[in-house]
Image 1 (cartoon, helix red, strand yellow):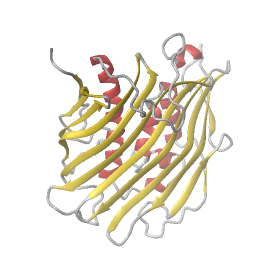
Image 2 (cartoon, helix red, strand yellow; image 1 turned 90 degrees about the horizontal axis):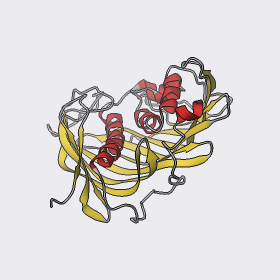
Image 3 (cartoon, helix red, strand yellow; image 1 turned 180 degrees about the vertical axis):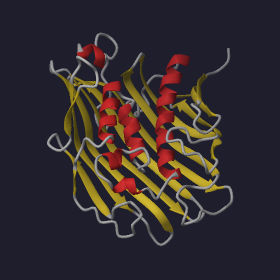
Length: 329
């Protein structure tokens, strides 16, 4: 019965993009969007933006250099993005990530040296294998599963003469696999990069990530996010001794592509993203999901810019409102 839990039987049936593809990134995807589709796709894009922003607004977090729960913890730069990207693909994967956060993994590391003691190793590669990150989960009575993680995550300190806090995260074939006793298997995979840089008068962060979901080896869904977020402090400066950014505004450019079926939404879209109203950060929000006090994220379909989704933010920790926009009759 685990197969039903994983979403077979008509819930997830169509093929998604292969690893490295953009799922509509060739600008040949769908050119229409219903309100229900806009809500689901827009929320997925908003989750990516929120995770990326959370990894920028809060820094100097020792947990980033840790193993297992350290990297996957909510306060680890990059970890928030990775956990959110993989966890939203399937509830069983999200449950597995929760176990990893609890410390049920002991992956190897190449070099944990942290010369400047800012919590980011100079150049460390964390390697996950079935041998060092595999465990049974019996949380659901009568539904035991085995969870395994494979792949590598590189953590690189990119501080410099003018950058007092910077990091690079490289994710290579990071895969969370959940298998039941009947052999049914769901696997969520991630490839790509994350970067952040904080200087005295500005900060930037970017991601280029491709994710995918498979059931028993068949591709179901995938998306590709390519974003650049720029931040300017309201007061003009950022203190090198700060542990999070002061109040300021973030603007965003990039693209988001979706292909396959996730939940009840099926389609193939390629969007251009921007922020018609800058995303406001108050300097105090510590939510790891919704950090913007106001602003708007907009995703317009590449081949039909008059149709897309809008994500409106109204407060720290408050889920944004996602709506469709389209030409009026």
